[in-house]
Length: 245
Image 1 (cartoon, one colour):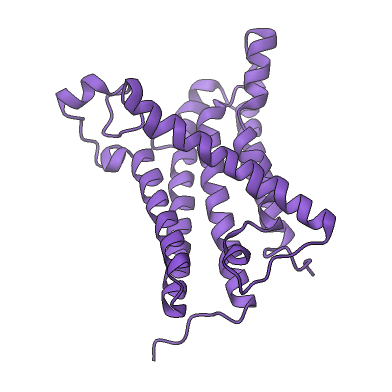
Image 2: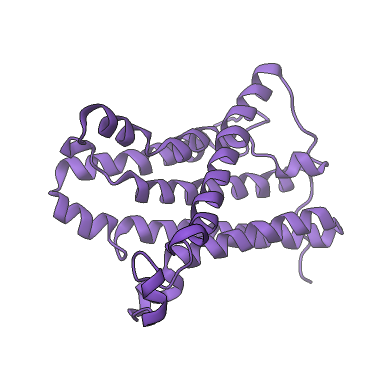
């Protein structure tokens, strides 16, 4: 299918994929008892957590490819930007998997378990101000960046007929129109559940998807979608990495 110049990915990817991933949780919850849904979908070894790690791994690979290209171009600002992106993916994925605890099955040291709300080997579940700085702060900053930079600004640019130059720093790092759908879904994924709890005091079974966990997956989808768009724009700019030989 033909895409507009401000859209780096086909419609099935930037629109269809986020919608399917998000609403499939509602479908699964409607079809499954909560205990089954929790065990096979939300558990640390469930589909949602594994999908989150897969998306973060893809985002990391894409970030490394973008960093390599920026290095070969001698663009230090781009190198620094994409290195930070890669480190963010590593931190997100490491924390999500409790740095291997969920895979290897070890128990957190007793001293660490005492300060970790879920007795896990991670930083974002630690108690007090540390947990806020290492969990809520980066989560909220990323949510704002996704909503404003990933969803609202691309809509504004399209409405005004504006496009960034693909040979500029901003043109390569700013999310394109392919991030609009996931830019709205990811930061707002838990809103329906929160509204229902505030209004009705409870969430009806078909809508009880534990949106906080689903939201983390959608964050990871955004990062993967974003970096895929970056790589396509690099290719469009005639900036494909040279052959190793």
